[in-house]
Length: 270
Image 1 (spheres, rainbow, N blue to C red):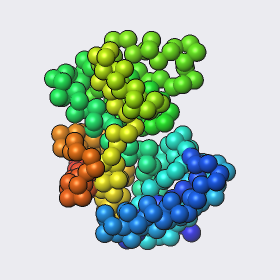
Image 2 (image 1 turned 60 degrees about the vertical axis):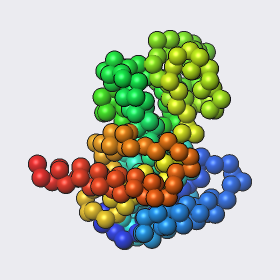
Image 3 (image 1 turned 45 degrees about the vertical axis):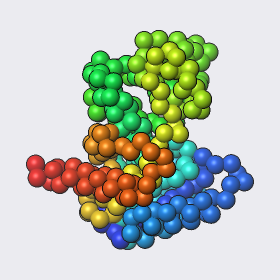
Image 4 (image 1 turned 90 degrees about the vertical axis):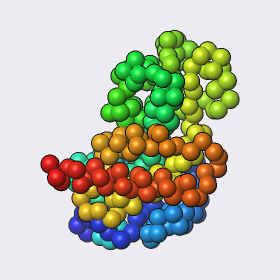
C-alpha cells in the first residue's frame, strides 16, 4: 500500500509493545487509549498492534496503515526505537507520527520554561540537567530550540564515572526521569528546582491536540519546530491543579491544535 499523507479522517494508536513486559495486554491498553483519544478529539481513533523486531519493521508497518489514517501516536514503544521510527517517517514525508515520549517531552519542556520564568531567570543563564535523557530523546532538543543554552544530559550508564550528584553541581533545574517524585525533596534542599515524569498530567490533552492538527491539515509535520513552538505556547497556561478539569484540558487541546496548524501555515506563506 502506498505511503499515506496527512489529512485522513482517523488517527491510529500504534504499538509493538517493546516498552512493556511480555505479559502485558497491549491490545487492551491500546483500546483504552483509543477510546480516550476519540472522546477528547472527536476523531475516530483506531488501535493497531504492529509486530516488528526492529525499528525499520515498525516504520514499515506505520507506512502500510490505511490511507484514511491522518496521524499516528506511538504508544508503549521503547524510547530509542520510537525516536528512530518518527525520524525515519518524517525524513521521508510519511504521515505525521509522534510518540508518547515526544508528547511528554513537550509537556516537560513547558514546565521547565514556566519554572524558569517564575523564578525570574534568563533561559540563556539557566543551567539544566536532564537525568535519564535516553527516556526522552527529544526533550533536550526541544529545550535548546526554546532558548535554553546550558543543558547537561545524564543516564544511569554514566553513574560509574559521573555520579548524578556530580553533574548537578551548579544546576538551577533538573528534569529527573530516573528517580521518583520522592527525590524532589532532596533537590529542593539543594536549591534545585525539580521536575519528574509524574508531572506530565496534561500530556493526553497535548497529544490529542497534535494528532488532531496533523489529521486535519494535509502536509503538517510534527517536527522539532512544531513541538518546540507548542512547548513555548503551553508554558504560561499550564494548569497547576490535578487532575486537570476536562474543560481546562480541552482548552489546552485547542491551543496545541491551533499552534501546530499555525506553524504549518506560516511555512506555507513564506
